[in-house]
Amino acid sequence: MARDRFDMDDKEPIRIKLIGSRDTNGRTYNLPTANEVAALIIGDIDGTYDKRDIILEHRKKGSRRISELHTSYLALQYPLLFPYAEDGYRVNILHRGVEIDDITGHAKLTLREFFAYRLQMRVGETSLILMSRALLQQFIVDVYTMVENTRLNYIRNNQKAFRIEQISNLLEAQDSGNEDVSVLGNRIMLPSSFTGGARYMYANYMDAMAIVRAYGSPDLFITLTCNPKCPEIMRVLTPLNQKPEDRPDIISRVFKIKLDALYDQIRDEKIFAYLLGGLYVIEFQKRGLPHVHMCLFLDKTGKISNGPTASEIDNVISAEIPDKDEEPELYELVSNFMIHGPCGTKHLECSCMKRGRCSKHFPKDFTNETHFDVDGFPLYKRRDDGKFIMKKGEKLDNRNVVGYNKSLLKQYQAHMNIEWCNQVGSIKYLFKYMNKCPDRISIHIQGASQFIEWMKCNQIDHEARQYTYVKFPRHYVWKAELRKWTKRLGRKTVARVHFVHPKADEAYYLRIMLNKIKGATSYEDLRTVDGTTYNTFKEVCYAMGLLDDDK
Image (cartoon, rainbow, N blue to C red; front, side, top):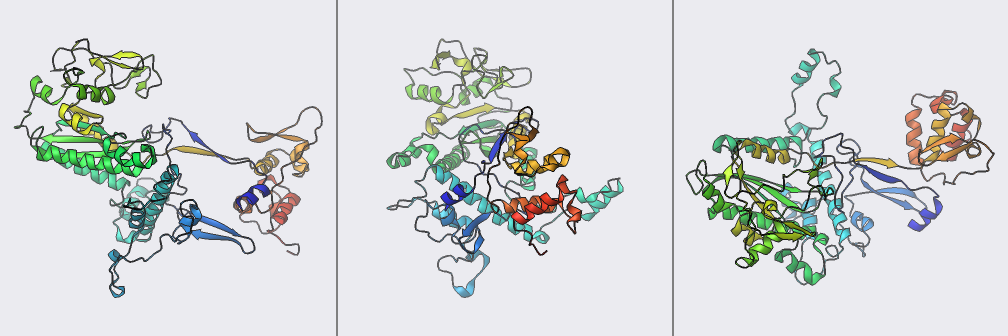
């Protein structure tokens, strides 16, 4: 039936153009840098957000909408993943062992629990979903938006249960001179329990500031990035002949396990000092892999004193290339994970290059011992000892080494940057991520609906109104690059318009027209609507089946 639809509609395709403008916040609105799967969610949380569904076209009964909560939604949306049309999620599924007479809210299976069950690996069972590679990524993103929609729907229908802004704030705004109070506030308030919302971010910010008030500035700042080729991940993917990018679920689980192990080790084994408190933020960058930013607050009477010495910092942080013969394992790890670059004027395409300079301030300067600059920031020991590592045909020495801890790097085998910090700026850097709203991107939908542009041309060009749509191409030419009709110059040309089935876009045209003719009560009232003539508009209405001859 998809083939029949394409054969019937001779239309130009609609394209989505991603806009890379940096007029807005660059941390929120920026283009992706990897071939990832993303979701373009239409409507957000306004009145159209619950219209995300499938439209089935029956040969005799016309179109029918299938909601995303319909048991056949997944089979219709993903026929390759559900070739036998298995039933998907349905409302009011009970947990196992629950009596019918004892039905509570917690006894029912949630949408998140259902999809978590479908995405689990089981011994002796091959999951078609988990083996579908790129389609798995699309499936995960799709079902996540379904879960998000159910949460937003609950919030939307239970606004009275949440605390909202007092009406006195609106009255105060009106008294201050703002007469249009309808633009103040939001119609739908997201509570702090909604992950990713503004109040959720603000609550996390206040929690973090409470730790700062109790323990002062952080002592260590750690960045851990997931290694997609670590043994734990490859042990699962190699027998399945899959790549790390094929299984984002495995990558996320292994990374969370390693993160929990790292935090527990720092707390229980006291590898740095007695841990007073800590906070971290996990971020999934557009480049693909997850990484964590962590701030640690240590007991100043422990291994690292208040106002550490150079030797104390050297025991924790190293910024030099190890000896290849004495520490071959550590040498390989530093070469693979802890070398920055090469960057600079020869590599302007590097992501760290901003305005012709490295934003991370590499390469650093050589220094024979660790010391502090005038602002209190540590300058780690980077001696000019002749050691180097070859990358992309360039020699990179100690000036390009990112600070690391030897024992932790050996244990976790991933990029783990450790920095000593006694500045509030470090905690502000972390809060920048904690308070950043979800990633967004600006798009522009490019379509060739030449019919709409013809109506616009009639609106501004009086000469164009004397030609019907069929005769119009003989006197005007369609400029694809400008997406508009322009008057033909020179010799006469025989031209035609592409045939479009009358009902192919009737819903779209109907919505456009009805928005333009609000208040019209007769044909005469339509003479000046959108610059369209009386007969032209009438022909369109008849062609779309909107009017009968006797009306």
